[in-house]
Image: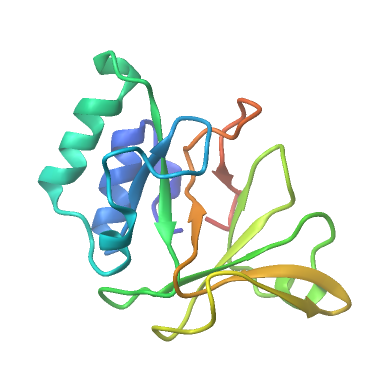
Length: 165
């Protein structure tokens, strides 16, 4: 993900995703579910406005006395030139995916998440497929993935692999 190395705060992450034209929505801190009171479905159709991003940070940031928050990026929908899709691998990484050198997100839990650009409306929210003999989960239209700088349930941050973010 171009520019991921400049993320130092959650506000930086929101600004970068907005700059890239990616939609996103806030998640409960250390969880994958949408923040209560925020309708995630609307962000599958559009990018949040700058004012919304500012409000999320103001209301949910631990720096401002909030509960903390993470960020999810919807898959299969696009508002510009980027339509993200994700492939989650629990353990082994299919060789053909590894050779793509695509944006790769890691944390200390499950295996890596690989993010690709594709055509709008492809695939269901979650589809288990076999790639090179390895079962992976394809996240298409209606799905989402947790974005870098969010915190995994065990307390470790999601991050882009060096040279692949």
